[in-house]
Structure formats: C-alpha cells, structure tokens
Amino acid sequence: MLGCRATSRLLSSLQRCYSSPAVVVPTATNEPLLTFAKGSEERRQLQKVLADLSGHVEEIPCVIGGKEVFSGNIRKQVAPFDHKRVIANIHYASKEMIKEAIGCALAAREKWDNTPFEHRAAILLTAADLLSTKYRNAALATTMLGQAKTAHQAEIDATCELIDFWRFGVQYAQGVYQTQPTLHSQRVWNRLVFRGLEGFVASISPFNFTAIGGNLSASPALMGNVVLWKPSDTATLSNWTVFKILREAGVPDGVINFVPAHGPDFGDQVTASADLAAVNFTGSARTFKLLWKQIGEKIDHYRTFPKFVGECGGKNYHLVHPSADIESMVNCTVRGAFEFSGQKCSATSRLYVPQTLWPKIQDLLVSAMKELKVGSPEDFSSFTSSVIDEPAFDRIASYLEFAKSSSDVSILAGGNADKSVGYFVEPTILLTSNPKNRLMEEEIFGPVLTVYVYPDAKWEQTLDLVNETSPYGLTGSVFAQDRHVVEESLRKLRHSAGNFYVNDKSTGSVVGQQPFGGSRLSGTNDKAGAPMYFLKWTSAMAIKETFVPCTEWGYPSVDRQ
Image 1 (cartoon, rainbow, N blue to C red):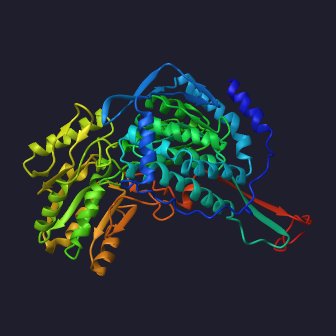
Image 2 (tube, rainbow, N blue to C red; image 1 turned 90 degrees about the vertical axis):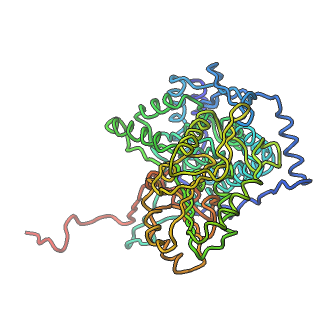
Image 3 (tube, rainbow, N blue to C red; image 1 turned 180 degrees about the horizontal axis):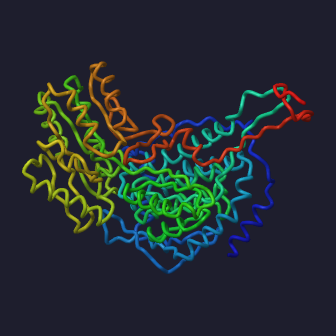
C-alpha cells in the first residue's frame, strides 16, 4: 500500500477549498476532423506510427495508486483482423489487487474532491491538447490495430470525440458549479456546493469506442470523484494509451486506477465494497442487469445508494417514407449499417421500406455492397474490417446460419463469414417477410441489415410496428420530405429512440451537438456529451448563511400566555 500512502501525502499538500463558480473556462469547439486523404501528410505520419508498431507487443500493467503492477496473470490482446498477431500482454488484476485499488482510490478521495475545480479542469484540458497533438497518432494507431477501425473511424472516435468529451466536459462542469440560487431572503445568503460522491466510481468501458473509456473514467474524476477503470480486454491497448495521456496531464496517483481484470472478478469486488458510490457502464444489457441485481441484493450494505449510469446498445432503425430522397437514404444506410462492421451501439440494423420504392432501393443497396471492401484497417482502401473477436464472430455467424435456414428470410448480399485469418464477416443484407422475425428484434452487433417491405397504405401501422418491435430505444431515423410525416414520426416514435435523426443515418452523434443515450433496454439515458451528464457525478449541498442573530423563538401567530 506504499502507493496509497504516497498519494495521501501528495494530496495533503493541496489547499482544501471549495470550487469557485466564478471561474470562466475556455469555450469548447469541436475538434477538426482530419481526412487522411491519399497523399496527405496526416496519412504519411499515421502510416509511420503503424509501421513502428509492427511486431511490437506492449506490456500493460495495472496501475494502482500510481504503482504499475505486472501481475503475471496475462491475457493476450490480438489484432482482430489478423488474430495470430499479438499486440499486447495484459496483466490482469487479482481480486486482492482490486481491493487494493479501492483502498488507494478512497485514500485519494477527500483531497482530490477538495482540489479547486480550475485545477481539475486544467488537467483535463491539458490531456485534450496532448491527445490533439503529441499523442494523436498513437491513439489512432492503437485503436486501428486493437479494434480494427479504419483511419476515419479511429479519427472520429479515439481523437475527435474524446478531445470533445474532455473539452466540452470542462465547459459543462463549469455550468454545474455556476448553478447557484438567485433568491435570498433579507440578510440571508444561499449557495450550492457540488461535492464529489462519497465513495468511488466503478467505470466499465466497452471495446467499440476508445473515447468512451476516456469519458467514463475522466468525467467523474473531473467532478472530484475517484475511479476504478476497467477497460475491455479487446480495447485495452488503446485505453492504456489514453490512461498514459491522463497521467502525463497531471491526474494524481490514485484518482484514476487502471484495473484490467476478469469481468466477474471486477464486478464482484466493486459491488462487495460498502464504499461503492456509482457504476458508470457501457456494454451489454445482460451485464448491466447483473450489476444492478448484485447491488440490489446488497443494498443494506452500502454507505450511500449507488448511482447507475448505463448505455447498453440498441436495435436501431431507418424508416423510409414514400416521399424520401432515395439516394441519400441508401448512402446513409450503407454508412449506418456497415461502418465499423456494424459494431456501433447506434448502428442501423433494421430497415423499413415502402413497397413502391423497394425495387429501386434494392438495386442501389446491392450495387453499393459490391463496392465495399473489407480488409485490414492498415489498407486505406478498406471501407471496414473484421469484427472484434471470436465470440462476436461466432454470435454473428449463428444469425447468418439462422437466416439461411429461415423460410421467411432471403439473403440479398453477403451472408458469409471466415475466421481463418481474422474475424471477417461480410456486410450482409437480409430481406424478411416477417416484421417480427428475431432478426428484426434482437441486437446482432455486426454488419447485418434486415429489411422489411411494407405496403405504402400501411404507413400508420408501420409506425406502430417500428415502435413495438424491439425492446431497445437507442437511435432511429426517418427519411421523408413531407413535413407532416416528420412531425407525425417524431410524435409516434418519441420513446423508440433517445437519439432521433431526420434524413440522416442513425449513427454519428457529436459531442456538444447531439448528446447520446437511450432508454428502454438501451440504458439510463443520462446523455454523455451533455451538461446533465455531469450532475450524476455530484452530491449537492445547499448552504444557508444568516447574517443577523435570531432574537425570538416564537411567531406572531402564536399567542403567548
């Protein structure tokens, strides 16, 4: 526990004071997106970093209270598009190490919570600048190799979105601190203090977005909390890059503890601690329910009621009206369904098309599929690459086998899968005559799009069908040029999606523009990338200060004897 004591001594030197709502932080703007066009300097630099990483295997420790711990209990992370290529050795935390990480976090908590907001904000703004410049290509390359993202997909995730999370996060946090009472009785001063949570936050991040790991860990820390960050096994390399950036930016030891671990071990240990204050989670609904159940069964054990923030995926739709711009809709659908091989929580996986438009839409979709190249992300002609690992491959392949054996499903494009070299699944379009087929209801999380063709005269019924088919409620899009149709769709589908798009694809939310999150089985809809998200990581204290003494215990309405 030497690391924990050192952390305590370091933080005890900081002045203990409340954060000032008078601080004005820099105005955030979205990070410009690099294109990596052929012949560009950014492509040349990125390719050099990728070449430098060829043959390199990163040793990734746990970091507990600032101390790097190489446990020797190793899990190998491989490149999913070339699964014989090992890119990292991940040293798993034992149950005892997870307990130690909790202790180190708690040792750092009070002093970090009392560190003025402007100093916490400065650390995160420094991290954003480091990511934007010095470590941009490292974040991109480790995301491309570890998660099989193309350069464009890595850029919108590992750099631009994460930079935006951090910069806009500082701006939104400032807004929280500036939320103060405006009414004061005579000779009374009212104010609010926003404290970090009393305990630690368990942040559990997914494989599919590097930015989510950096947000799930850093946003609670910005508000004065201490964090145990468990990265996904299949995104640990890129998340390790992010963690090192945060350390270099000045996050004190013990504030964010990097704890790769076996999922059940991590879940069991954090939910067993009486000091668990919150769970910040992105992953499957099944795992989120399990964590919620574990906490519910131990509810009498906790010092405070643990908060839950969860984002759990979706079965996202494109709904096409007869008035739609067909070409735009097709292009949006190809992007929404097949970018990053359909492994975005918001990926388009069900498509509803009117009967009169279907022949032309089918031709355009099938034609587009013939041009999509699936290959290594290091090949800049690849539109997409492999899926993330063998369990994901096997799950998606099982749905393809189901489609081939189903009497009410036909394969229009793709339908094949091969894991001999990498975990490659062909972008696939399926057509079903049964709108309640499991392919329309269940999250596949792969490059599989299922189409249902509806009679034009049954638009109203189709709206109900879209709303009722899936248990999820994350994203959805309507394509229509008729404004009355758009209004009707927004009204009838208002609970079917937390992010609703009009004449655009169901993916691609931008921090500061479209706060992201859904309800139903898609999660708690706390909207990452929005001001409201930061209220989850505070415990407000209202303060009333009276400047004149109380000279009477009675009231005029009470007659004295």
